[in-house]
Length: 308
Image 1 (cartoon, rainbow, N blue to C red):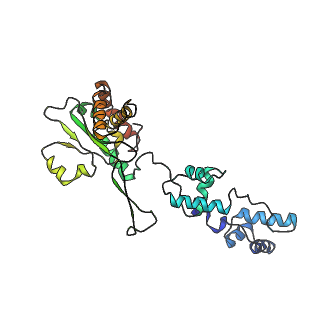
Image 2: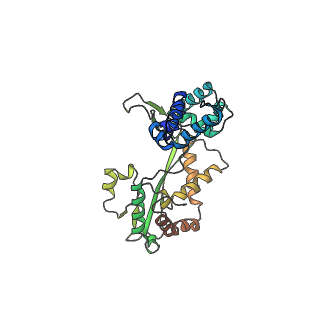
Image 3: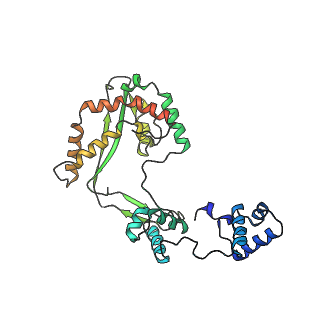
């Protein structure tokens, strides 16, 4: 149950509480005084006294409570599914359990058991500090149209043969302490990592290299190697501001539509390179020229994600 519904004023009156309301009312107390003394709403005290004067009883009417759509056994099944599959959404839990209630009911049953339903993340969440830094970064480069041609954009994309990429993942429940036993899952797939360079007339002198602030790119070795290169400071969690992010989507779409099935990593690498070479320069130029509108869209949204 949500915290705002756990207060006593939202709970049902007991038989003794209803008798106290009627007794205080007959003793001359007002509805506001009764509600303040019993920590209830004024409407609750008024309805209880109105029922007493009309029916001669203050007992709660039988059957007035809304019937529950699930049984106790189904509720336990829902909570077990949420605990066993921590990334499952309310829709998946509802389909797996096989109950005929709505998705909102499943979410409410999880809240009653101190659990929460998961939902897919549409974008990386932004804190107010992230929005402020993104807004300041865009405001400082609002006149990008004249300076954008001297920036070299880079990005690293990983394309996998299957659903897994061969990396080792660590799993532990969110409610458990960090020093508890964790489960290590080793993925069995293979992948290839491609580094793309997006440049537009920037091979001469005065070019600026755009480097995102991921862990490998902010390492001491990487920063030492780029001491003689002018780098562009990049705001954290800003994939919508980089035009090269859409290039990765274009390559991924061409790999999915490729008629030849991918079996080995060298074949996957060749197909990714062919997809990169087949992208028309007009599309690359259009993405590069969209930086001006990206920056102003971020400024208008006060640093929140844009539609790019």
